[in-house]
Image (cartoon, rainbow, N blue to C red; front, side):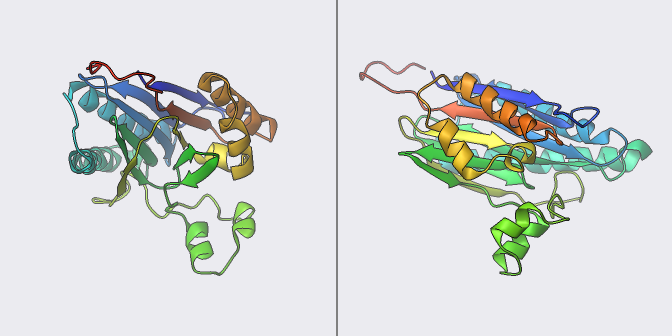
Length: 254
C-alpha cells in the first residue's frame, strides 16, 4: 500500500480557499493525486478548481486499472480535454463565472511508474537519493522570462507579475497539458503543490523536510505551517506520496 497525504489551507490572508485537491483510488487500488488552484470571477476560482477535482475523482474511481505509461498519458490528456470544455462552457454561460479557470497538476501512480500532467504553475517534485527534482515547468510569465535569460531565478521570486500564468484549465476552448511518465522506485517521494507553497518555501526547505525520517503526514503539516509562518498570503495545498518499501516478494497485493 502506498503512503499518501493531502492538505489544503486557506492561509493567513485570503477570505476563502480557491484551491482544491485530493488523493483517490481506482478499482484496483491505484492512486491519483490532484492539486488545482482556481482563479477569476467573484469566488469563481473555487468553482473551477472544485469542478476539476470532482470530475477527476469521479472518473478515476470508475476506472479499473492503468497498466502502461501510454495508457496513463492518454487517460490524462482525454480527461483534461473533457474538464477544460466543461469549465469553459460554464464560464460562458454564467456571468459570475466569466474568466474563471484553474491550474492543475495531476500524478497517476502505478507500481513501477507515475505519470504527471500539468497546466499552469502548480508543481510536481520528485525526491529520491537526497536529490530534489522539479518535474513540471511552470506555464508562467516569469518562468518564460527566466528561460529567455531576461531575469534570474532570484529576480523571479519578487517580480511584480510572478503570479501571471500563461495557461489555465477552462480559460480557452482548447488547452494543451504537459504530460510525462517517470520511474517510480522504492523510497521515492512525490510532492504536488500549489504556488502558495512554492512562493514561500524554496528547494532547500523542501529537501530539509522531505529528508526527515518521520511520517509524511507530519512533513505535510510542517510545510503548510512554514508557508503560513512566512506570511501565508495565498492558499496552500499539497499532496505527498511515498513509494512503499517491499521487504519481501510475495503475492501481488491487487
